[in-house]
Length: 162
Picture 1 (cartoon, helix red, strand yellow):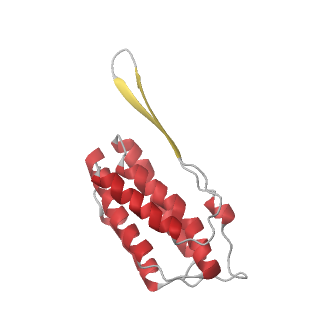
Picture 2 (picture 1 turned 30 degrees about the horizontal axis):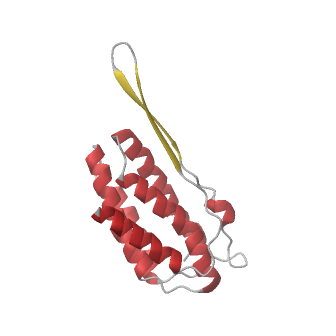
């Protein structure tokens, strides 16, 4: 209950801080367990949407200026992924919680305005959804795939922001 309240509050803050909400794309996680005659295999199919890239725009060919707290938060999340020795489902869930805490700080300390802020939110909304999914992951394979996708997403920040 407490976790869902925190998530709801975070999403509310993020949504309320936007002047204009861009079209969002759903992220779908399909986890199926198929069993064979001798053993059970987990078949994880994660359809993670990275179409946010198609909605991003540079500032007349130049990267947007971002506030220091946002860039520091992205750097910290990348460092957490790089330095984390995740092997179990619980490890991935804990990583998701830690990433969520850093993301909450980024949202809370955001001072960006205008078009740079709008583009930040195009980038941020899918990241929020991916981090939420990582906190609910049901197996290590799914956690590994989500973490890899989150890492790629975070690295994409530097394509659009200074």
